[in-house]
Image (cartoon, rainbow, N blue to C red; front, side, top):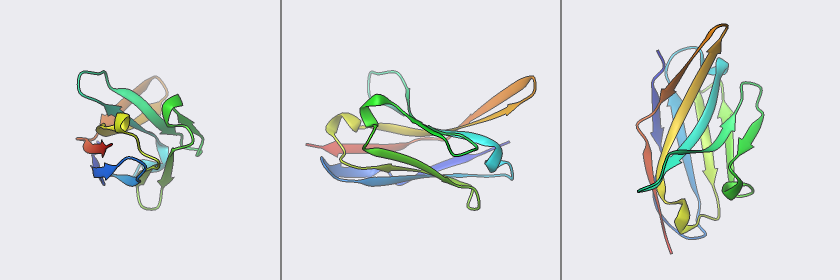
Length: 119
């Protein structure tokens, strides 16, 4: 079982920056594919950024060049650096972890952290 706890959300003006953190419990963090998702009011939850076990990253088009995902396996933590924030980035940001094993996979979710960007 993996528990994820996000932190770092808050209020920021457009153009500002935040750093979100997601701490994972357990001893399998290095084997997890980690992602950040977000959900704005009235919209579906969508992927923002992913980092694989090998450190490869992928971003949703609207955040490329502004957001950076990173991971620290020694600290069991994944980060999302949000720069040049825009009002449309306002959402609840969720941490997601996926464990893939032969024949099965499982994913885990955090409780979410709110990011509000004012214009």
